[in-house]
Length: 151
Image (cartoon, helix red, strand yellow):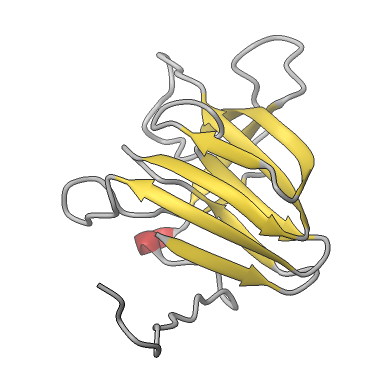
């Protein structure tokens, strides 16, 4: 679980939650969501590292909206951009577990302009960034609760 407090214009870059279901609830503010689902392509060659993805959602969310991402559908590859100051509460199940395929990957839109389906304007090609590292300039600061523990 985590809460992402975002100042206006801040961005959580394009990333995924492989093998996980994620519930995201906007606690306050307004943000823009852009999300994609992978497209299965049987004839993809190994020389092409980019993968095609179909646009799932491109919209604004306002408090108290909730969105759910499933492991293989529902916009699991997504990015958030804060329009106003906002906070997003995320619940991930199961949690990240590097080494067994549940490690966050970050992506960028590729310059590759090959569509797996004719007349598909909602298809983009995504390149995975090296080593599960976020883009330069992006960091998440972890906070900790300093108050009393109530049992």
